[in-house]
Length: 112
Image: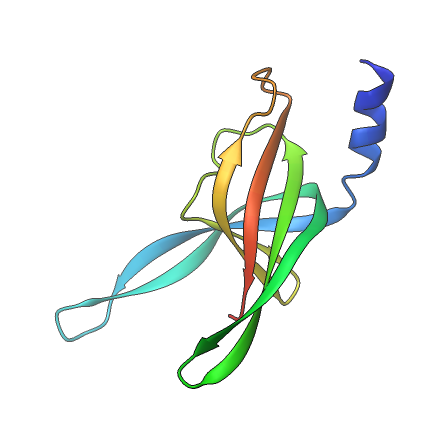
């Protein structure tokens, strides 16, 4: 293991839950989407940028972050990450050097 890998592993200090969307019947012929916990892992969270947008006539702040974790095959866009009360929607996922050692996710914090 290279010395830079040890530093990266040491930075994985936040415990995230991986959540996947699941459709549940709503009782009137439709379905409601809920999120179900699929896995837990350690990762690094880095703030990238923030902005303010208007939704339904009021300002709402959004934050963009990078989450770095050990490689796993079940992380993809459409799922989300939870860190306590904070929720992050996964926008993109990449294996930066193609070695299947790390994943980099670009995420956006949302209000649950």
